[in-house]
Length: 67
Image (cartoon, rainbow, N blue to C red):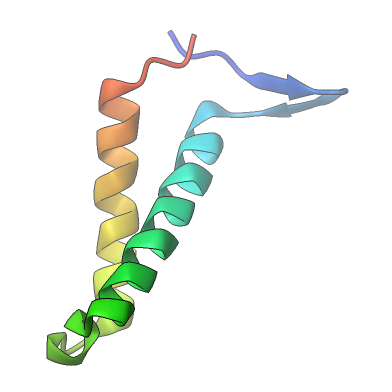
């Protein structure tokens, strides 16, 4: 069962930490895609970024146990 992360007296839920980590991974992937020129073939880049955050969040929460 996941537990909260405590930084000082502030408690953070594990899903918040997972979403933040997924967002940073998505930023890196989008930066690489921009450098390689893959973003020009995507119709709706903002939607793709949102979907990447969701997919990476699910993968991180599935394979990384926060205990």
